[in-house]
Image 1 (cartoon, rainbow, N blue to C red):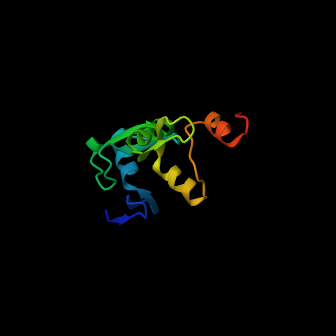
Image 2: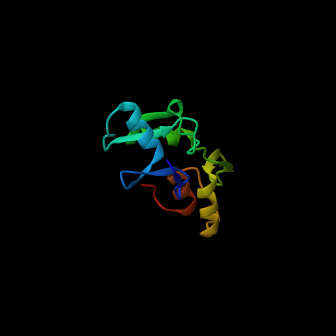
Image 3: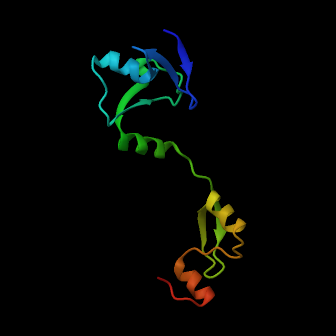
Length: 122
């Protein structure tokens, strides 16, 4: 069968006149049944082009989301709170956003921000 590239990097093919993701088709053929709506075919090695059955597994949508969240690495930056002088980590993307928005100080907690700015913490 001829395969086509999907915009997100997956391979597609035409089955019975319908475009289908190749990894889902391969899993359905392996199982001998259609996939359920809540079943996601996950590429174990992360390569969306590697549709060998050994590289594919069925997960629920929530299991799949959890699997990808484990793989996602968040870059952090070390910051010292200007109020209590405690060192803490902040997600780099959140730090960059705060700087872009013009925040002069970034605090370790709402309590420290409240103390420093004169407002009560929630």
